[in-house]
Length: 410
Image (tube, rainbow, N blue to C red):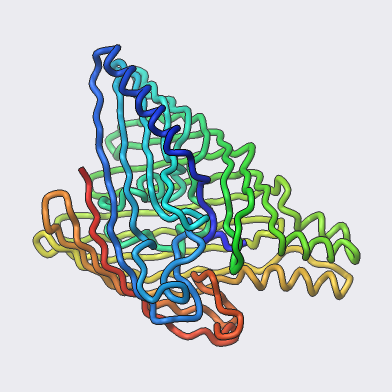
């Protein structure tokens, strides 16, 4: 299972979105309270120097490279959001997004649908469909206008599926002379789809009994962000099922350990940002841990930018490292299958990027970025849809990715 390029939230029917939006409008009119309609989007084109594999984000089965020499779908999306203030303390939010889905369609899906209640002391409770706050920009990554890059760095943001989840969350901000500390804790679950790596079709992916917590610190121009999450993951595909069935003949205990049937998965992240009128500095680290057939891995990046009037010039260096496997078997054939399962999840890589952002209009940003991607030997890098005959797995080449985006809000 290729986590950084295959997993996303299952699509919702457009009719359901219209019904929910209509209900929110009706509630707002009946209560005679304010409502706000807003939107965001990206129109982006990408080119990759390789024709043996696709570069895609963590929500897409194919992208630019082998499938399309030039592609408009890697970063392009359109989102609309409706906020309804029922009272001074209660807010309803609904958000719908259209982007490339695991089935290669652009069918809109419901990315937010939540009710928020805020007490007088600032304590807030949210329930419904929420976006995960796993990383610095994870919760608002779909509205890329606020981010400096063409896209969030895949070395970190591709470690775990960033999909909408059904959750109950409590947040509390604490103002001190040393800054504002905002803490949160929640429970979550989700049902989504995972597209199969290098083959057509999708399979069900389920997260259950999820728990998460986080802490954010803001002081002047500084911001720090820490999160930890744990969920029980259930997933299988035809290739994984075949491997585990064969392995069960030789070592059923090891096969059971590798099966992703409510397998506990944890994710921890730590990030920091400084942005003044002249300089931008961002750094983030994350680690995914698993004792199942999903390989453990870590990733990190550092971004340094310089403002020149309204323009921003920036550079990013990132590293992702797959940590191999923890399972083993005394049976040589079973052990060989284990090695093959985890070798297929080797995405270790170095990336380097330079980019620029410039406001062509008040609500429109033009962004250009060039990435150099260097997978380790034996690694599939950030790619999907690899050509089994032409992709040089033993010694992958350094490829160039060029992207030009228009990010906008309205």
